[in-house]
View 1 (spheres, rainbow, N blue to C red):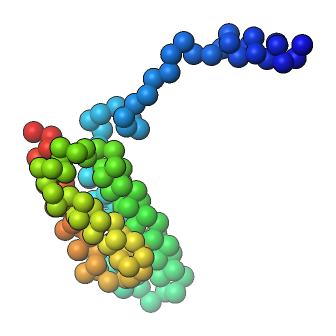
View 2: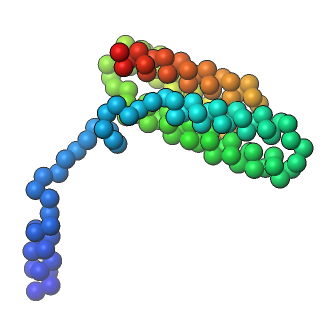
View 3: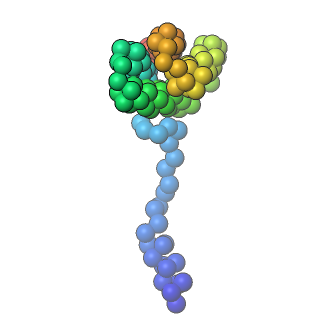
Length: 139
């Protein structure tokens, strides 16, 4: 009896149709500025790290830098996997390499593993290249 009651309730509350979307949220909300803001925070944390002599402060700066580096990777991955489609990659064949290089610059071999501001500058330059292409696709 319990099983038939459960099945009846499941049928009553089941949706009439299931919708599937091609992205996480409605189109038009993507913007490489999110990755850039986080990358600027990474650079600022590196600069503050270099300017401090306080070991506790330096430790916190590293933690913030690593957290923000991970957010850079996240925002880049969303653009790479959700926004850009086959026609974009055909029109801009360098996109895969740019994203790969940028996410690596935000990873353990880049800003997560270094306090070198020059690495953050390289990351920001890659994000700017991606941004240029992104805005060209929006025209």
